[in-house]
Length: 436
Image 1 (cartoon, one colour):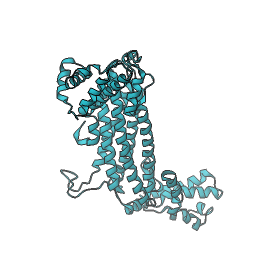
Image 2 (spheres, rainbow, N blue to C red):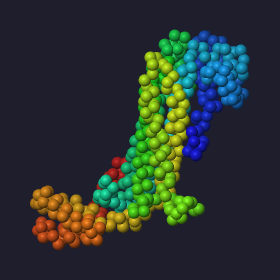
Image 3 (cartoon, rainbow, N blue to C red):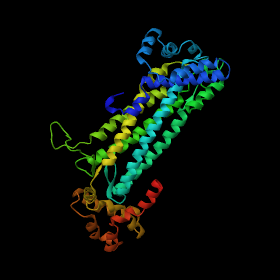
Image 4 (tube, helix red, strand yellow):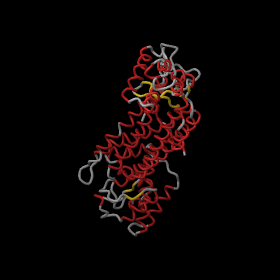
């Protein structure tokens, strides 16, 4: 994880001490269940929780020192706990295997990370909705292939983003449900040395579902789905960030990132106001997406288990969730403070001499009895003159001067096709679909 792109709440989930605390809870809850089943003395479970009640500091350095000798992280942790608790600690981990602890812990961490990410998405959705309502009827040009297409509103641009991130939230909710499973099934996952009721008890205490067949490890198709979902969310972040970057270009300048007092855009050119936040978001999205392929490659493990997935997950588990958490918060700030320039939007709408109304004239000609091929030819030949004049000529005036066009349409009928408000008659309908 990179501190520059990390936020404390998400980072805390992945700190070694937080991990060891989850490990202890798994072991202690399992010991509780084993005690109720008469497998271990009830005094053993009580001893664990009695020590825990003293709010012990987890000595990460001491555990690491033990691991340096044992070369096994779970054994190192169990050894350290035994040193703190005493003789009763020998009943910990009865019938369990390391993956029971590691995989269940990872499920808890990813579930907690999901909750933070969903809160991030909620904040982003609120900001997008507020700005969409603010600019519901702010006219702007819609672009296809980067070229002026037809009029839209800036509110509709944001409504599209809202709908997309709303889908992202639904996917993340489903991904959390899929990843939040508990496996306490022992070696090879057969429950030979531990009762399935122990797993059920631990799962209930940790708010997890039961893994139907764990084969000693939780199947990694779940993790592949989870990190693929994070990658999709990151792509949606990049999509909106890229739109802002385009809108901030000097030649467009319809919207731009907030430029704070004292902020500098370039070490060499004092005039610069660069879209640095959204460019940063584009880069961060690549980092999050980078976890998706390794997560998919982790699905194919040898037989009932191996640990080829382990080293990979130690990287991208924290990195993907921490980075996406930061990116969502940053994007929320960008949208919240986005500077929007309606006058420039109108200027760009008017830039090309009314070309954006060409389809309405085309359709009117066909409805007046002109074949579609001829109608397209008539409108295009006038439109190309406007295009080649860089908007100096007026499509409306050229059409009214074209005898073949006026043979089918009266001048006032042509003029009516250049009414900008026509394009916005269903904005309310779209907003109702998106926002309810």
